[in-house]
Image (cartoon, rainbow, N blue to C red):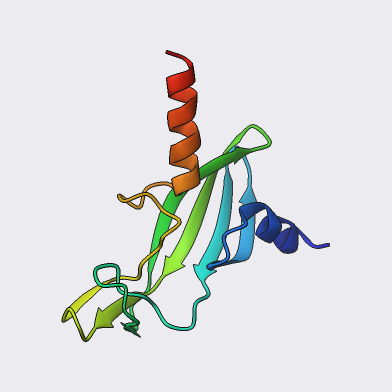
Length: 115
């Protein structure tokens, strides 16, 4: 099994496809969303992708005692219902799009356990 396939299994986020991995003091897993059509984050309806993707860098669980980041190529989309252009909905991220929801959940649990 190649490195990309291994990290795809480690990431376990069905809406993402891993494309590359950089390993140094930190691990950066490069990926992109793989849904056919982006979803509007406001009304959750199917939206139309525009030609200007952006990169998000979000915190995920540590791997091999290294800080791990997901570098995600995200589509901007235009929603006919809302009339707005926004970043597609990413339900696996926290509300601020700075970390995965699972990372926030485990970090919060660890902090509460130490009280």
